[in-house]
Length: 176
Image (cartoon, rainbow, N blue to C red; front, side):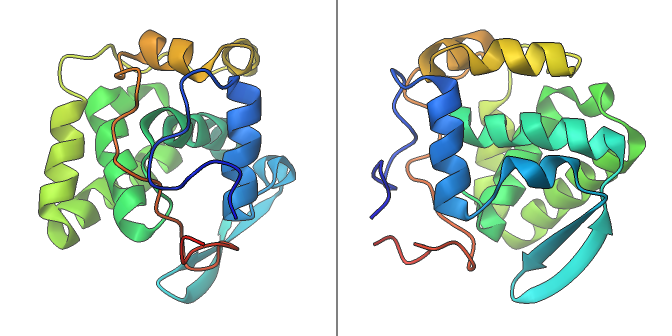
């Protein structure tokens, strides 16, 4: 059983550091993967390896915080939703490699899950642009509560998504 129910975003009172740990655990992700030379991914059962340049190593830390604050899942639809949300928020702060990933995710979302991608795009309207990512900012954000993080990013206190859906290889992808 997940430490926090999957049918809702992580609680606003939770410290970000603890929420990130819960997010990583429920998805079988680790912080060690942030700095690896390559990243092994699985998408709809297809496993592949991508380079993990410094720009992605930094961006994925923030990407995971975006999942924590919004509640968007790590299943394909959830990844496309968070890509659309990030794109609307302004991806110019990321390098070209990361921008390509976000644009690809957004376009895929509009093709495969148009209502969900559009809703994520709309929810990012009238919110502050994404800040310039840095390890210093990341460390500062880890010291906030999830509610404070959401407030800083213009996300409703309860998050955005109704529930956290997990990718197929997550230990509790079936929601148990």
